[in-house]
Image 1 (cartoon, rainbow over the protein chains, first blue to last red):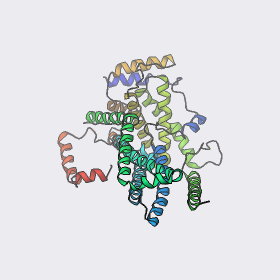
Image 2 (cartoon, rainbow over the protein chains, first blue to last red):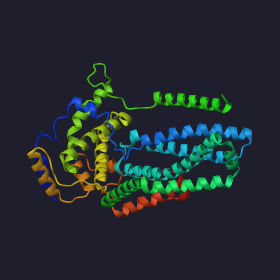
Image 3 (tube, rainbow over the protein chains, first blue to last red):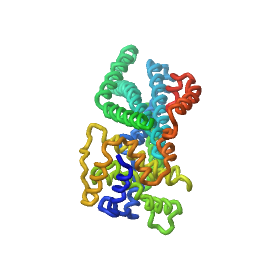
Image 4 (tube, rainbow over the protein chains, first blue to last red):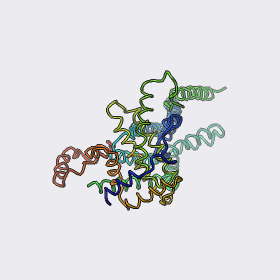
Length: 207
Length: 206
């Protein structure tokens, strides 16, 4: 590759073409408010949605935990565990959102930027485990609430079988995790692999 | 109405109030920036004129990384959007041009990552204007299969950016360091990183 030849060809590019026309103010007005990151890299909306859903669940769970505490119910430990899990899930997602800091992400130098993208994707993949655990707990609590309303005698017998509940939660959490591992996670894994490979390629070339 | 129903209704009302509050106070992008407004702020005028002034730089990196008209236009708009976002959130009078370069390099890297994904489009060069098509064909032929890092270096060379700035833009030490110097730098860094590595890795993400 001859730099001089490339420089000559670079200078011979047409001054104005269909591809490189002067940018108009009306174009700029539309472009500057556009989000530059594609959906695969921009996880802000997904994280915010999860935080909102988890917060609602956390409020409902706090109320149920209070009822269990006052009435010395059978589900006190289960609700406490759900409370802790939800609190951690909210903390994890908030932390990831604050860490990502999307408005300033693209202002970083290339390698730190790619490293940060890698960490964000890695943590987002981990967050699916929390999602499956929260969903399993949520489904069980919903099932119990519905059962208490429609069939109180069945609820009575079900609420005494603590071990069954824990087994159900574990079974549902593992099943959901396997489902997400096969359906939602692979594309993020591929993306993470590509980002990592690209970053390593740049580093290797720079050294 | 039972105690249970009253409690559920009050919780639903509270959740509704919370959601309404979040909707009103959530940060969202403005629908448009009043660029043609005579009462616009000085910053928006600065941003507009800066982007207009720098748009050739953005087209330059598109020449190196785009293969088709569609890719070219897509990359151009994304870089301009990224540059405007960078300047709006991190801009100071001194660093605006650097932020534009950061946007160019980072968005070009993301573009190449997207092309590396399995749904890769064809790499054949295909542009609308014939002169541009010919210039791109010749240029890409001469360039051959150079790495993206070399393309970034070429871009900085063509845009007359000092080579010392490459280290700041990529976050990598520049070529002026030899192996011995790099090893010395690594040795200096080791004591800092040796703080309970496993726990640090779990607690600190960056």
